[in-house]
Image (cartoon, rainbow, N blue to C red; front, side, top):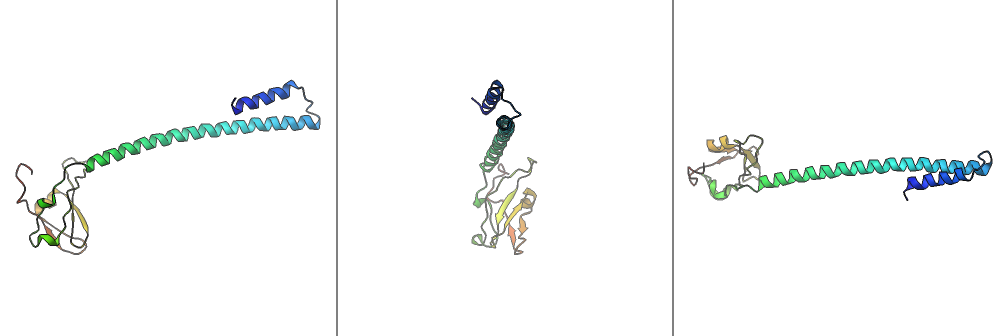
Length: 155
């Protein structure tokens, strides 16, 4: 039996007893049954709201899972190896990261990242890569790139 059903049952019992609500005992029992009815209504409203919120949270969780799957799939794409980037000065001075391959809505734009000797990570596009160099914002060092190891088919 639900709380609503129990409250209705108590009201029915009170009505069946034909209590005199003019006397103190009858007034007390009537007020208690009315209070139980009000509490039952509020509790039902809280339960409905809780169920609605729970359903919304489930939908949000599913959406976040879909976004996470999409992002992880993007990160799993093939990257350039460190050997694809060469430094003209000294290969050991610079630590170049792999291509991140992030796609910012334009399928023709690929964003690359390199790590300067100072530790600064610099993001740049293919136009900058084709220019052959980029200047570090932190230390002012010029990082240079070459395509000597890349086949024309890979470009």
